[in-house]
Length: 228
View 1 (cartoon, one colour):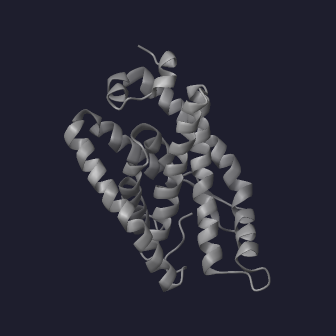
View 2: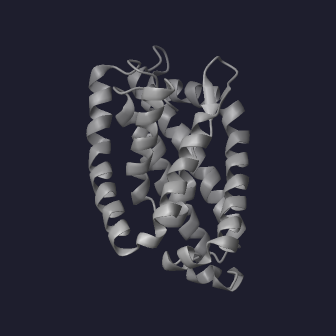
């Protein structure tokens, strides 16, 4: 994650920007409508963005000299749906690129797609699948946040493989190598993010019940577990 400034070939950087832009525009429309129709959720939405900023700014060195970190975007996708995270994630990544030298402006589109589009949509899909299977809420939230995190790094590995195919084994071989670079540190980080997200959701159910009910969270199949 956080592909650094200038690392991607210009055509790849431009292509990922073009792919991410419709999601960002749709996200801005969704956030604007949310603020208009449910203004009581503003603080919770801001907290979701702040959580993504803080947790994704804490990086750990990987075995190969690169860095790994949690993403934090699963929480917002779980509470608000995945569409809001494209805008929030873009803001987070832009500030990190400008203030912390994490990522870059030319690679912003690629980083947005992996962390603020692909990860949140997978997290949301996993939560809805857990709802359909009548899985306990804590387990659904854990799996959603963990797999959303891992999806971000899998997509990043794919982006790097497309840009830098292995001379002998091509894009497939390059993808496997990049996944192998991320896996030793990212797997435990994804588990930690999943557990932390469960704790935060449980806290919000305890102290922000009105806001969550206005968002229709937890979903109907989890209603029996919801606190009054």
